Length: 133
Image (cartoon, rainbow, N blue to C red; front, top):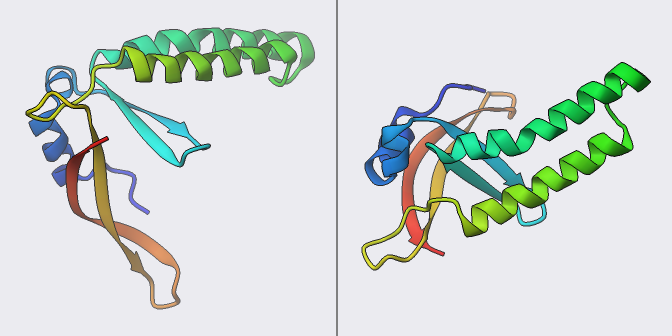
């Protein structure tokens, strides 16, 4: 499957996300409990990256001492990072808003493409729309 960003989707996000236009960086945060993907864009990406540093430090220390990255400290740092990240996303992260000032969610629609043998080969971008939360 292709790994390059879809140009039409990027163009759509640029149109509505001022922060992304000014600083075109994206970090995705997966909430597996709710099957939700949060796209953090622009300057907010640096905040997420700063919150992730303790995880890397804890894992590096664990590798040095134990020979693997799965220590209690590394697990605690990762859980703390997830908690802080979701808190930041819900409370402080800049959000795209509609004309009424309400936060909106990006809904992206792709059509799956399959090989002759029935295996998934790629996705073709169809459309993207921002809808109220």
